[in-house]
Amino acid sequence: MKMMIVADVHQRTKVNSLRRKRTTKALKKAFSAVDCDMAVLLGDLMHGPDYGDDKERYLHDLREVLDATGDVPFAFVFGNHDDECAMTKGEILNVMSAYKNSLTEGENYVLHRGGETLLFIDSGAEYHGEESHYDVVKPEVISWAKQAIEGEKAILFQHIIIPDIIDVIEKRGRQYRFRDGFAYSGKLKERPCPPDINTGELEILAPHLKAMVFGHDHINSFACTLNGVKMIQCPSAGVNGYEWPQRPCVRLLDTETLTTEIIRI
Image (tube, rainbow, N blue to C red; front, side, top):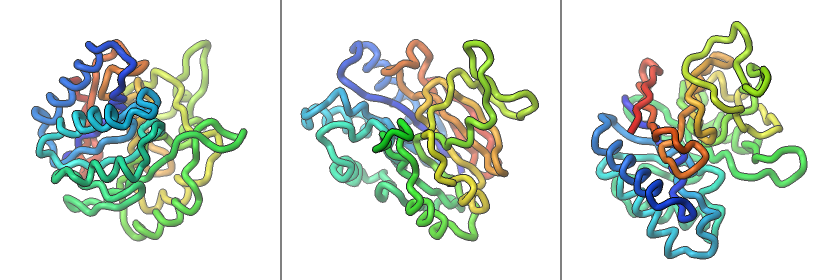
């Protein structure tokens, strides 16, 4: 099965109108031109803080993004910015449920499609405490996920990358690089931004996973293997954030071979 991964669109109001239009145009092009069996909207579809209490504008822009999917089946998982506004996660999911091509089933869920087990986890937003900036995947969610996919080899999709990635990265001067001898492909252009607390997600779920797919870090596009699980980092599919002027991209994943292709749109 071929899956198109669409990460970090960040549709928003407080940005140059040309960038908004460029992002919308790129999305429409991707969904009409890229040959895939389904798509994953990998969080931060919307930049909630721009909308505040303006639900009407948020709903208009959310529907504009979702309309771009056309007839391509899609599954959505929350990023850290989607609901940072007057819209609740439940309200956002209700909008998605009205789309006939939506496969989304909640905040954390499992799909069986194309012979694959697909696990979607909401990695949260900000951590409520001083120990970390970004939220952690809670132990109870990890326990649920383990039970849901036990005995299988699933592909996991979540917005924020796991803390284990920091163990294989070092800073050289002003730049972050993978440690010498560590095998990877693609590009590491910024320090990954996981939570500062490791709740054991990789260690616990690794026996039941073949890949983990992340967004969040807009200009990274690497792939590597940790604990026997392939890590796939997806760059931004929009130009509404700090990735500007990088051209928007989607990542095409072959779920059988776990090979990927970066497609600039």
